Length: 153
Image (cartoon, rainbow, N blue to C red; front, side, top):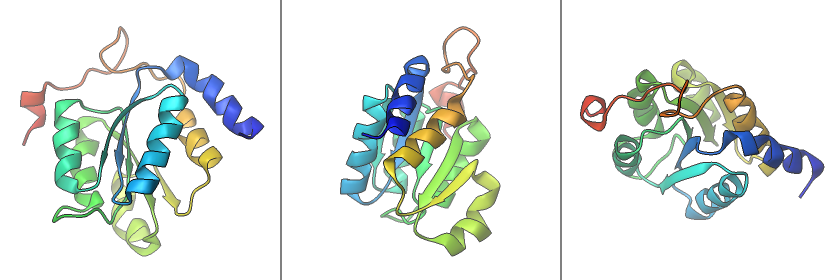
């Protein structure tokens, strides 16, 4: 692991309990991200390979951040999932190979857009910097999530 990745891991110590939903249809990539983030101290939700599963997981345990691929399996794509989650206060980072759709359609929901392939250091640094100074939801001073009943459309 590189020094940058190690710094991200130690920075993440203060980010414990921050929840990251992984929405990625490539299971190998999704499991790699999940392992990387869990090792860095984040609570990982998922991974979800379909938009339907992503929404189900999010409504069960609303994440603080979602790593979102645009091209999810199933009838609901990542942009549609982001359009449901962003108004609930979920930070969206698109990680996709679909540059054109990301730049045209996903921009309004995205905090950041990364184009695949993405290095582990880059992903960890971006997640860490997104969470800087943020308190986990549900903790004193943290943003409060709507209840599951309030979150379901």
